[in-house]
Length: 262
Image (cartoon, rainbow, N blue to C red; front, top):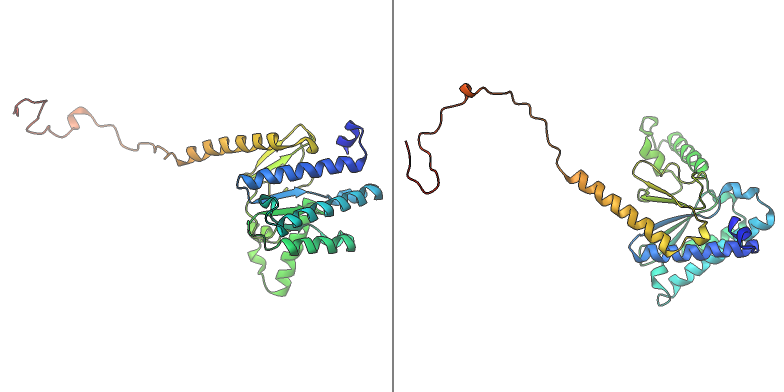
C-alpha cells in the first residue's frame, strides 16, 4: 500500500489508516443527508496479493464492519453512524469464516432506523458484476420469468449486485491520483454521474476533502437544474408583414390625461 510505504509504516497500519478515513467520510455523508454510500473494499484482483496481505485486509474489513454494527446496537453511541451494511459482490469467493461474520453483520444491521445504507463491494469488479447480471437474465429467460425480447438496460441494471432498489450513482470519487476507475462501478457511472479524481491517497481523504467535493458537486448541479428550468425560446415562424398590410388604426386613442381625439 502506497500510504504505508510513504510513511514507513507496517502494512496493517496503512490499512488501518484507510479504515479511519472511511469512518470520517461516512460520518460526514450521513450527517449532511447522503443516505447511500458505496465503498470499494476489496477487488477480486486483490486475491492475487500475498496471502498475508489478503488475510490482513479481510480481518480489518470484518473488524471495522463489526464496529459499525455496534453503533447500530447502541443508539446512544454515535447514532449518526448507524446504517444497514450490505455486502455487494461475488460472495462465493469469500472464505467461509469471514463470510459467516459478514452475513451476521448484514443481518444485525438490516433494521437500522436511520435509513442509511453502506454498500461494501467485496469482492468486486465491474466486469464480474456485469457478467453476473447477464447470467441472471439468461436464467430468468430459461425459467420463463423473463421474455428474451424484454432484455433491456433496465433488466440488466436490476440484476446487478446492487439490486433494483439502489438509487442512481451521483458522485464517484477516485483517490490516489489515478485517472482510472480500476474496474469499479463502470455500469453505474453513466452520464448523470460526476466523477472526481483526487490527487491524494485514501488514508489522507478526510472531512475537508470530502466537503469540498460535495460543495463543488452541489454548485454545478444547481447551475444545471437552473438551466434546465429556464424555458427555451422558440424560433418565430411568423412571416414579415409590410406596413400597408397592417389593419386600420382604432378610431379613438387616449394619450396621457388628454381628451379623446378622433
